[in-house]
Structures are given as C-alpha cells and as structure tokens.
Length: 284
Image (cartoon, rainbow, N blue to C red; front, side, top):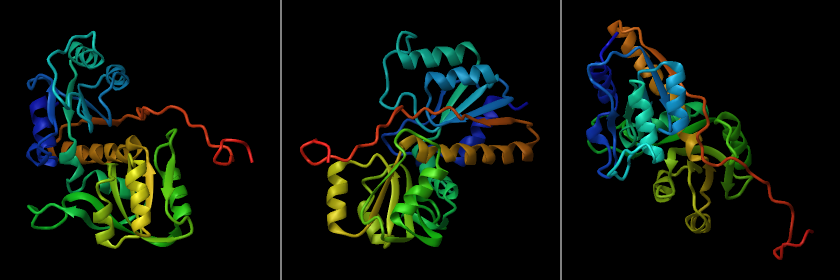
C-alpha cells in the first residue's frame, strides 16, 4: 500500500494547489503523511455524515470538493461541528484532502464531469485559463447538444440526470426556446452571465442563482438560465476524480480501492410546489 504522502502528491498533480483562487483553502486538512492508504472516499462536503461514512468504510483518506475551514478558525474543539469532524477523522486515522477551485478549472475538471452527466459535447472552457497553452483549462465549459431541446425539456433532462435533490432544476427564460448550445459551470455561477452571452450559447446551467441577477439577465437577452442544486452540479466530479485516482493506482501498482459517497449532503431537504394563486394569494 502507498503512503499517504505518495497519494497526496498524485492528487496535487491532478489539481495543483497553486491554481486555486487566492481566497480558497485547498490541500490537506489532517493526516499523517507516513500512514498507509488502502481505501479512499470521495465526497462533495466534509460534513459529519461523510466522516462517519469513512469510518464505517474503513477508509484512510477522504477527498472532498468543498473545504472544511474556508475562512480559517481558532479552534478545532469537538464541541463545534467542524471540530467534531476533525476529531472523528483523526481518532480513526483518516486524512482529509480538499480540491476546490483548483479542481473547478482543471482539465478535466468539475464542469467536464457535469457536462458528461448530461451527455453534452464539450467544445472548450467558458472562461479560459490564460496560463494554459492548450486552452483546455478554465472555469465552466461550453457544450453542444446532439439534438436541440426546448428549454423546458433540457431542464427536465438535467433533473433526470443529476442526483435527486429537493430543489430539482429551475429554468428562467422562454420555456419553448430551443437549446442547441449550453454553458455549464458546477457550483455558484451567476457571475458568468456576461461570459455565457459572449460565448453565444443558448443557455447556462449552473447553481445558486439569485432573483435580481436572473431578473435582469432575462430582460437583457434571450439567454436561458437553469438553476440546479449546488451539491448536485458538483457531485459528478467525485466519480470522475475517483476514476482518475484509479488510473494512477493501477499504473503504480498501489491497489487502492476508491469509493464515491452516495450520501446526499445538499442542505435543502424538502420542496413544496406552489399552487395556482393570483397575486393576492387567493386560490384561482
């Protein structure tokens, strides 16, 4: 079995920490570099449910997309929920490693996995990384559909292909407008409206869309907007990342066993559909 330090070096080669945004907190949160690794668990969120799953699985390493301590901390006391995660992991000899914005812009990255989940054909990055001579790294992806779909049908396709969440997928724009090309970006993406318009795509699929930016966007152009759950747009990366580590393990003869958590850690747990009412709230 490889040492943790060897596996972490391989992960850093896939997602170099220096390519993370300056505000981000990526890399190894806890773990002894001299420990050996047999099982690795991939997940989106480093929450208690994932730590407990790693314990049950017997994993020695958890790789998550979201950081545990994005804004820093002065304590890892077990009385805090993040401290409890750290205590659980260390007590059971489990390391935690984070690949966040450095995985977003990688080749392949988070948005490649999102496009793959929807069977979209990737044309290139939505926001290219100027340091990439091949022009394949960057934030988001511009994609093509094999067969054009009305916006409402593309939203239904996304809802069927992405992991089920309470939110589902919302769409803004003309429901009957044909979608031939689409930009996708895993995670929060309402800063990408101008980029999507400049790319000339018919729609943008992302997450965490807010009322005012969306309201203004649909008034300015016919760009269709699709809002999926943040967790759901990033979960496909876990499967892609596990496959990448599997290739490295096979090449090096490590014999690692990788696992992808199916635990839904999206914070929204219920959804109630609106009933038909007029603006006063009285039933029609």
